Length: 282
Ligand SMILES: Nc1ncnc2c1ncn2[C@@H]1O[C@H](COP(=O)(O)OP(=O)(O)OP(=O)(O)O)[C@@H](O)[C@H]1O
Picture 1 (cartoon, rainbow, N blue to C red):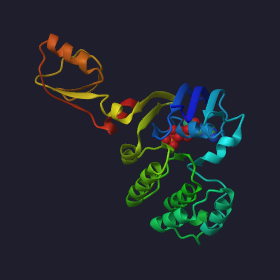
Picture 2: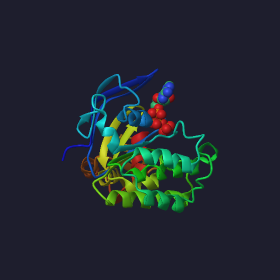
Picture 3: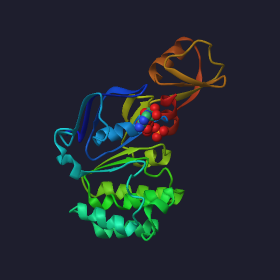
Picture 4: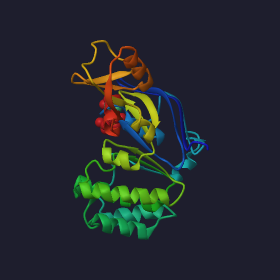
């Protein structure tokens, strides 16, 4: 299947910050989480995908079109940045009127449903809403456009816990409705665990991997040794906990080493997805 987004040799500098060069391919019908440390370049990457920030080098193809040569992809993509410019003076009713008129596939009943679910006061000006409420209204103004691809930059960072769960259910339902693609920059572990099919990890401007979620969940294994760990670094060792616990990303090599050195272990298990992501970001 052809990727919906195909990034090749992308490189961007902002002052002394460098992002890339890297390649990234995003398959249709999947939820891809972009995960990274603060300042890693997630928002910059999403802005480049939307052709809002120009890379120094590299190509971005969206729906098989080069984003800077052919803008027809725009009608298929909805993008939610961390901060929406120009919304502040308008209330929810006015924003709905403006936006619904721009999108021929606007789904009014979905908008009303989302506004009800999130309890958004449409009479209030966007600029006077709390940040969580702004996120809810912004999402209620996005999903009814019926885009094929949604790109969300930390969509729930200001939401309360029940609203985050509500949005996850809404997004799962949205994905199930058709052949849709969701790209999500997120620090929210529940969101990643529940929604993501694949996870691209960015550390300080480098994409260090793009994994299937299940692959990442099996990436590191923690071993409990019967005796103290040797001082020497063990095969694939990424971390030690106390005297007897070691985490590796090379199970087979570690087990062969332990056997060779007659070091016994009593238990092993794959580490949690959150811990795996944290280890990759160290
Ligand atoms: N308009 C700008 N002017 C100067 N530097 C910028 C600008 N936008 C981004 N940067 C820098 O680019 C780097 C990447 O920022 P970006 O916002 O993409 O990171 P992020 O991964 O989204 O971070 P966070 O998780 O904190 O939201 C940072 O060093 C940031 O300071």
